[in-house]
Length: 239
Image (cartoon, rainbow, N blue to C red):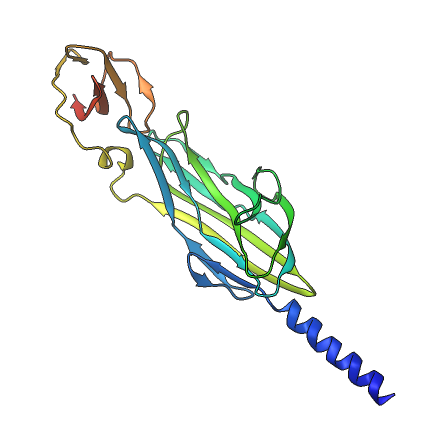
C-alpha cells in the first residue's frame, strides 16, 4: 500500500511540475496571474513618403522547457477608443487576434477582429524549448485608414495549460503628442514646386497626400500635406 501511495505521490509531483512549466512575457517582461500589462510597441511602415501601415503589436511570448499544450482565449473588454487627425473618433476599436505562432511552424488559427465583448479561442502545442508568439494586436493603418493620434484597447487574455490557468489584462495604447505622426516621419527630399491657388504646381506629376497618408485631389488644398514629385517627397503647408 505504501509503495502504491509513493508512486501516486511522485506521479502527482511530476504532473504538477509539467503543468507549471510555462513562461509568458510581454515586451520582454514576465507575466503573472492577475497582472495588468500595458504595451505601446508601435510598428509603422512607410513607402514613397507616407505611412501605409500602423499597428500596436505587443511582443507576446509563450515558452515551455518541457513542452506543453496551451489554449489561449482573448476577449475584447471594450472601453477603448481611437481618435484621428481628421476629427473622427471610434468607440471600442477592434482587437485583432491570430492565435499563437510557433517559431519555425504555423499559427494556431485564422485571424479574427474582435469587437467589444467578443472572444476567440485558439489551441497550440508548444514543443519543448520552442517559443510561441501570441499574435494579439491593434491594427490601425493601411491605405484606406488614417493614422490615429490616440488609441487604447483593453483585452482579457486567458491561458490554459495542463491543469493551470493564467489570466492577465493586456492594454494596448498609444498617444502622438505632436498630432502629426505622418508628417514627422517624412523628410523633404528636395522636391521643386510652387503653390498656386490651392494647388501644387511642378514639372512632372504631383501626388498629394493628407496627414493620414490618403491620396487627395491636387485642388482646393488648405492645410498640411505630403507631396511626391518625380520620386521625391516634401511637406507643404497650404493656406
